[in-house]
Length: 562
Image (cartoon, rainbow, N blue to C red; front, top):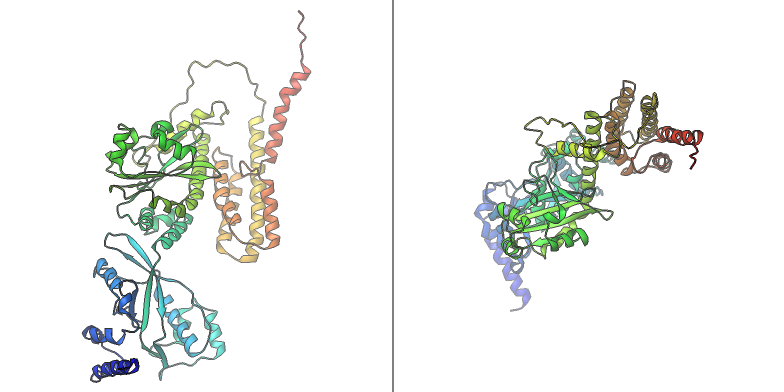
């Protein structure tokens, strides 16, 4: 028997099987027909679902306009069985509007020969049997679909099609162009899934890091679940420890998010770096800027004779642990901590996945540190007064204590700053009116900077017409009004924080034309690179004050005879 005879007999056998099943020729209207004829459907689709690939491919057949899949490959079937019947397997971020327009564009392309690219990647987010959320890219093969008009079809001319393409957001317009029961989609589609868990999790991490604190609080996907998807460890815990370069100590996070803790410090507020780490981990993290992994915490504890790090980890039930330095411009900002109660869940092999994650954390951690520094400055100015640099450290330490206190439970009471057994070595003469004049110089600089930003925003708004730009203009004008009122010590820090986080980030990360770029470049050239603020008037005032002792010294010299 030739191959041709074999294929012919195979097809004839299939045709005989559907001879008394007209729905397989004219179209299935009752979904029970799929459930009752699974074996027949499997045979009909055998060429599209090769048995040899069934354990590798994630593939199924689907009906157009219905969230119904059938004829699963073995691998797809296992994914569905693991997740359970209660899980709603729906397309990520796909609402009625997007679904309707997507199908309309399919008709435009197939029947009207348009080239409208809906272009949005489609994903399923499906937890596995361990509860790890896995992400699958959806690929559709629509070769087996036929699009036919009905008696209710409204045939479109090119101008109407153009109007649709120009008005994606107008769902009513699309529904008028494609009314209900106006088109028939006959046939079936093949849906194939590709596991993109790691890539999608990293993308979600980047998106989450860019969100505001309010948006993060509304986000369903936690920081921890993203790391679990990347490392495929269902019981993975994520922590963080800040590094204070000035005092060479590790500090627990001062975040409002109670879920992100320092496993390394446990209940300690801060710890000396060398005491918190053993010799080998200190060298790896602090000297070589490389990650340090403990695959078996119990074995590590025996080798290190119950070092405080291993004791802290064992007290929290962790059996494998990973520390990774988070740096920016070769400056250590803190340590990312990953922990699991399973031995060797974290090891030297999967530790290499950190290369996908760490580059996106450094900017966020740096921003958090800068925010904390600005808030510390504001607290010092609000609770105390202008501080000389020689004693500033003690006020800063008290402000840090405030941030690390549990403010949600009890109100923090600031301590009086006292220096015992301190004797003055010189006297400083206060220049009458100097404080008022310095405040006046600060206000002049702030007004100049705000006004220049407003001028930039006016030009941007006339060019782009973006509502968020208008909002920033309103907020800056509000600061100008506050500067007309009696000056408070914390207002400068509030304005500084707003400009640094809201304005500078916006100007640096938005695409503009050449003229606007030149204007923004001129603005950044005027700011002090250390403070990020205008301070020319303030510098002129300080320079004048500094000249007074020099003038006095030259005018009043005494000759000492021996």
